Length: 285
Ligand SMILES: NC(=O)C1=CN([C@@H]2O[C@H](COP(=O)(O)OP(=O)(O)OC[C@H]3O[C@@H](n4cnc5c(N)ncnc54)[C@H](O)[C@@H]3O)[C@@H](O)[C@H]2O)C=CC1
Ligand SMILES: O=C(O)[C@@H]1CCC=N1
Image (cartoon, rainbow, N blue to C red; front, side, top):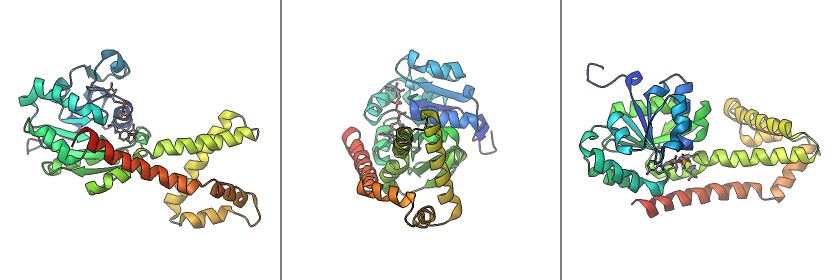
């Protein structure tokens, strides 16, 4: 413990209410970076058999959400938006008085801080931070944001930043931006996988073996992304450096433009952001 009575980061117990894909990416990233070990991670889900993969890695697993809240210092709310009220009802009934002092971190798309604070008011806990993570946190290349609720302390923000920053880039943003960031960076990996798969398909169509086509498509995306992040050049200028006059690339770019690729990608992000706001209104408001 520190002189203020708060635990040091390495002493924390981290909980996940819901042990699905995103919880696995965050916990996997935390362990891979050496921040904590699986023995400090506690996960709850409705059925023991769906928690087996956690257990085999050394995490502590429970079918009761309240137990995880009681044991842990920081609890990630990592269920789907429509499950949250049910998962909270379970917590409230079993453990209400024991979890007043806990920090809750929501990764749930769409659900606003105000709605979360209303849900938690019934057991006097209002230390909540809303985040929007993404699955590449698993490999230390996350792209995440957070927004603290009114009751979150400086130390709470420090804890969450320590986790998110260790697993990629991380910014604090106004809550009004979270649906859009969720669409761009939360959903974005799926859009990127789809593009990599399509490039791989194109390579296979032109005679490249599948494994090599996928590896080259992914490495090309990675390389291009690094060029954008490290060169400081505008994406248009970088594109122009690849397009020789009368060459192969501009011919391919023309095909993409005829296919409406830019509008399709912009539409995808607009639709995902709109859906995020809708999920919040529909399930918890
Ligand atoms: N998957 C992603 O890339 C991202 C997901 N998110 C958010 O993370 C949250 C979780 O998403 P995923 O991990 O993809 O979903 P998932 O479906 O993989 O995981 C949800 C987990 O919750 C468990 N669960 C169901 N009912 C429960 C209950 N009553 N109590 C406790 N656990 C229960 C399920 O067994 C499952 O393991 C969602 O709210 C989503 O909006 C946010 C950013 C990215
Ligand atoms: O598809 C979803 O709803 C979640 C939120 C962002 C990424 N996955």
